[in-house]
Image 1 (cartoon, rainbow, N blue to C red):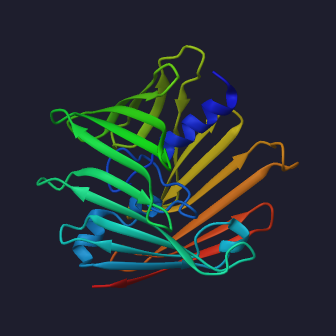
Image 2: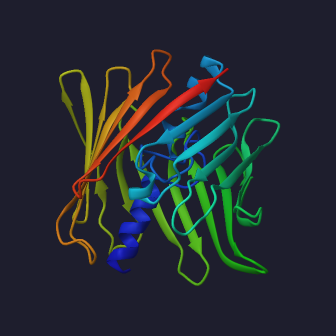
Image 3: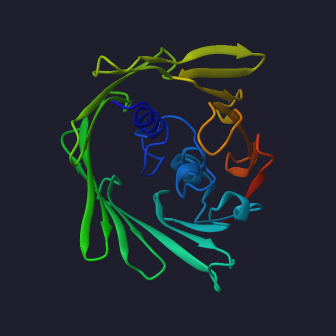
Length: 288
């Protein structure tokens, strides 16, 4: 397998698409530019306990990051995300503000069963369907579409232990051989390692340590380094990533993200700082 695909696949594991309120998303990720990534921090339990019905978030550097500058998330009575609308400001290429839409559907057990992503014109660009096979397995089928033509299909088979932790992922993409990865956890329920059935791919080991009242998890994925710090309440306080040089950037790229919380556990803001001098802050407001 090519190095670039392995890195992409590993990042996909850390920031698996779909609602991070669910156990298939394992570690806090980007937040900026990923519409539903902050749901791993604004969890269903937190939102339900706080009585939140709607979340409005806006950021300060959407133009530099080339991402949405605001989004509105609607929460249903069960604490699940019902819809996300992300909007982009006017710029030299767009004369008007425009938005894209994510919609989520649940079964009678509050399990997500379908996700739909629509563009500014209402055209459905992506549909994801979840099929539950018993209590410890489900199949996820994601269909990316071009207008009047099916473009690509991604199928996941995800397996869980009795604690609801994902222990195995088999990913099938059209035209490629299946890829299987295995997940192992420590006594505290934290991700300990990821092992690939492909013998050419290295096992990823997550190292754990403590610094004062903070718990730290670190991993090296090929030449990229990742670090997560959690506070004494178990909330992710910061993430740090160092990427090796790549074609359109000559130096080592660093990205540092800090997370701040309200007393009820909901996100207050997220700040980002990169080695290319780009800085951004995502602010959150709530209605009940």
